[in-house]
Image: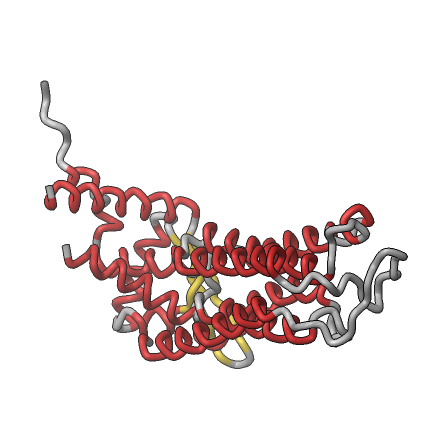
Length: 200
Length: 103
């Protein structure tokens, strides 16, 4: 029976050495705080690429950690997830969606958060990491909440033409739901990172 | 009606050895690991780890690739498809045994 216990311990220790949980939580947390705060305003990286790039960054952190510690990256293919997130995000730019009556910027942002959450869910399920899958479901929930309850009055931005029946208001409320999710993910990531380091 | 086979009959002698099992579990979790990491995390000596890796390599369960990073020699160990299959079989046998013991 000791062997069964030690198998679980070895798995846990390996995941801690890989920072398999903290890296994705930290990267996605910072992503949501940043893009939630600025919304669709000017960014060094356009939001339509940022989600996919966040997954590439998680993969790169795993590779850097591999060379530093000698343990390979966590299971679950972050590059494949980046590709999926990129493709799905581009679909939100289809005219049929972006010019649809219901497609306010905050609704689009909600969809984007759900897409990022789905990417994390795919990685969590493929890597048999139930905690990551759980966080992914929370992210999807935050995206859905943003879509449903986020501020809807502001229906255009600098990048989209103003349609005659649209109303433009300035200083719209920030999407607190996405920012809140980002803060929670970041804090959970920091806490997990500290725990992973203690485990080593 | 014959008695069902005892779960221990499913144990794989080569994989069941605790050090080799631990090596395979680490490699199953990570895509690969280097010799130094395995040695440190499993608290094994160079000789002991080397011997177990040789057994696993000979059975085709792991692959070793030796190289240099700068002037530092580094040996990476990767789990093969056969290694993953044998590990799954062993873990299944252990699960069955635990289930039987806890009944």
